[in-house]
Image: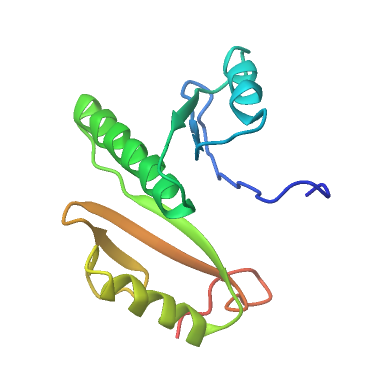
Length: 150
């Protein structure tokens, strides 16, 4: 990451040459600087992947995250319907240890937006229909980079 970079996005892909393996959704949380213009300029270029700028006038990162996730989930469900497939969402989350990962799991479940899906610690259902896998990494990895599940 460069000194001004605040976020890195890692997307594993495999044999996706025919597809756009991802789209980038930027949620402008009511910026008052040049952010909307910079995003519009980027959206006008051929970046090799779809770029959407979604305005979110309500202040606060929670509103911006929810607006972006709502759009992503709607598009994912529409793609699945069109293609006749069912996919899930995978989120990789850096954690220092298993107790932190388990606390995060309990927080998700206590939100009432996530439900347990099966017996695996990382498997959830979001809002009753979307399968989600929350994959921990960092302090829970073995030396060969596989996850040391408890």
